[in-house]
Every structure is written in structure tokens, then in C-alpha cells.
Length: 256
Ligand SMILES: O=C(CO)COP(=O)(O)O
Image (tube, rainbow, N blue to C red; front, side, top):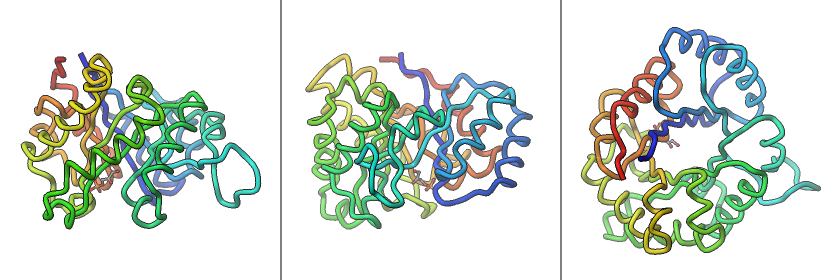
């Protein structure tokens, strides 16, 4: 049985005031069965965590990226150890915006996943194809290459401590969600690939979907057998929408 996981990626959004408001709105909602976490910009991690700890909300905090280095002269970088130090539980690695705007290669993403694990944290490894790649019929080849680069370094057993996120680049922030069948097809290919290395790990791995997930489409996506939750961008900025999406994942049973 896999428990649903819904993670909010706030990207470069938010402020202290925004966080205060978000928390006070979320407090009105009841506990959900789904595991939830929010990944704010680095500078707000401690503040968000402290505010969550003094609230009745059970929610993890994560980061959107980390360095491939442990410490030293790397201006602007933040090490996974530092994220552990301030109480993160998850770290997103390989988000398409990092791959696209910061030239992150598959190998770099794999190194980051390893640093996350060494720091005792849980990696959320993102994979996804561009529109061009999809139209050229290269979706499977691209996502499997992204996944395998990470599995070659950390192995399937360690990936299970975190999650794999399938985020088709053409669906991110565009309002264009993959139809559930399309997403399910890729999720199954990813799971089968993990299973071919380690069957138990493939069964237990949570594979979450990201790309224009909203309260209105979450239920149908999460009803697919290999979609175990979501990585939510825009909709996670609204406490009400994030809660509705988390609830949609809690009403689904992920039976292995
Ligand atoms: O990139 C995403 C989450 O990491 C998805 O973003 P949107 O939900 O805004 O499309």
C-alpha cells in the first residue's frame, strides 16, 4: 500500500506575510490522510517550518534544489546538509526549470540526489519531456534516461525513501494538464523500469504527477493506478486549493 503524497512547490513566490496568511487559512482545514509538504524558497524554509510547528498542521517542509557540494567556496549555493540542519525533510532535484534555466544535466541531478540522501533527507526526483520531445515520440526515451541516470547512482531502494515526480514540461504552468491516461502510461513505464531493477522498490515507490494539477482535475489523475499524488506549483499557493488536492489523494487507495 502506498500512501498518497502531495507536495507544494512554491517556486520563487511568497513572502513572510504570504506565509502568515497561508498558514492561517490552512489551519481552518481538517487533518488529511495524505502526506503533505511545502517547498518554499530557501530563505523562507525556517520561518515556514517554525510557523507550522507552532500550528496544528502536520506538514513537512522541503527545498526546491540543493548544491552538488557539501561546503566551501560556492557563492550562492546551499548544501543538502544545511537543509537538514534547518529541518527540511524533502529536497526536489532535477526540476525542469533547473534543467532548462540552469543547465542541469542528468548526471548533476543524480549527484544532487546522492547529496540529499547523504544528508539523511528524502529526494523528490523530477523527470519529464518537452513538447518537442513528446511530438517526436521520444517521451519514454527521455524520461527513462533521466530516471536511469539517478538510479545508476543511488539505486532503486534509496529512491523509495523519497519519490519520483513525472512533470511533462509542456504541462507546467500552462494550464494544460496531461490527460490522466497519458500520465498513467508514463508513470507505468517509469514504475516498470524501477521494478526491473528491484521489484519491491518498484511497488513501493511513490510516483507523483506534476503539471497544472488543480482541485478540478486532481481526483481523476490520482485515481490512476500508478499516480500516487502530485507535485503542485501554482495551485499550492492557495491554501484552499492545496488542501483540496491533498484531500483528493487521500480518498484514493494506492494498492500494490
Ligand atoms: O512545476 C510544477 C511543480 O513542480 C508544476 O507547476 P504548475 O502546477 O504551476 O503547473
